[in-house]
Length: 249
Image 1 (cartoon, rainbow, N blue to C red):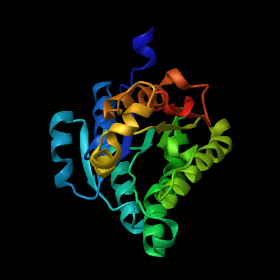
Image 2: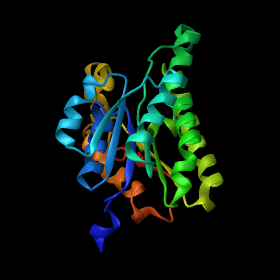
Image 3: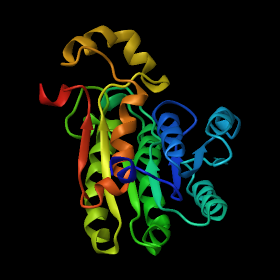
Image 4: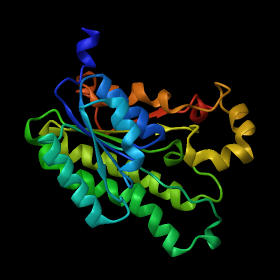
């Protein structure tokens, strides 16, 4: 029974930002559980390793999430390649560390475009496919910083707070269509995007995390698979925090 709850055989998934880090780990996990997976990132070359490891059921799609036209083309290609969509994992994100007065409007707009606007666009445009057969799933990768704040990171914190709000709002709209919309909020995860933080405050963050370490991309896999599977059919509008206990401390 447990295996059937988390079985994704025959499901069609799109994972953004899937060339590395959390997105890569999630895409491979979905494929391992039987899903056919379109992996989307800015460079198809960067996705080559993912498709090679994932096998014939994993397909690379090149698109720039900061460019709405490019993103629309990427989604159209994914829908054509997969023949529809059952699971959407909005993982791609960018960060910007700077005080408010040193954050340009261009940097602000770049973070909002990738971390929030692209999620809205993909959800809006993929919605009909997700609802077509009922049972569609959306998993948005937010952040523990969508529930709290830190200094010198206003653009990212604002985007992730917005993403959690967007998740709840769409969940309410789509609840009776058979589509569940949830978020996962990682804590500090060791990825390429967080390299500069680890270099400057890595030990401090590990000490302040109750589990005593940074997270790894693989630590997010279970939460995403749960929210993408039939095991979560009565869960919607929720944010599952995966942070080693940081938010509880």
